[in-house]
Length: 126
Length: 193
Image: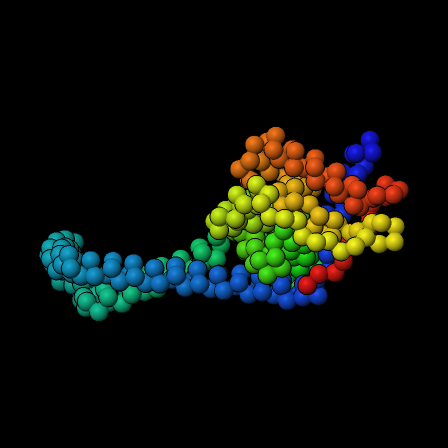
């Protein structure tokens, strides 16, 4: 019993935190390291996202996807024209749409930016 | 509950702060560091770490604690949880620097303790200095960090029987140093840092 009491007393002594005059400074240093690590992690993930986006865009460019889309849309153009001519002769629906490639690139850029936002949000949630 | 004001955080229970920290609230975790930093630093010094080393390991332990905060379920005290992490971090550091084997074998002589008070007693920090390094490590890990003998044996890479012997010898020495006359333990400890 005395042994148990002694051990319990010893645990209590160990549980008593000694006084440190720089206790606040210590906590501040830990918080700074936490914040630094967080900023660095976000930076790294953001950089990885940008690199991934650039690689993806270059792959799209190199695979001549623009040409393929162009070919496909010319085919669709003809089909739609033919279809519309049958439904309502004389009405050119495609004249309402600007088939400018700038639109495609702007849309791709916006998609990458949106992906960036989503990634940042997901990282914050994690 | 989102990121909160530091003044309000001081009213929160450890478990509430840990829950906030699990959502990434670094201020809430900072409050836990403020509450338990001294305890962790003190434990590491009691295990035998020099003051600057103890502070380094304590910082690393808190960072590791933040990373692993999702594993803290609030079933035990946060202090005990973070102390276990710190004790293991310290042992890993000793192992990395190839100092663990030397300490565990007791190759280093005990430090000189301050003289006892009028009643013939000394405080815990001074009493621990009279222990050999392996006894000090084992006693601090089991009674300070709350590790079982088996966990301490695994962490120290020592046979269970050896750890039990170190603890037994350490306790005998502490008993004579802490409560030589009337059996009452000395309360409190001296200031550090």
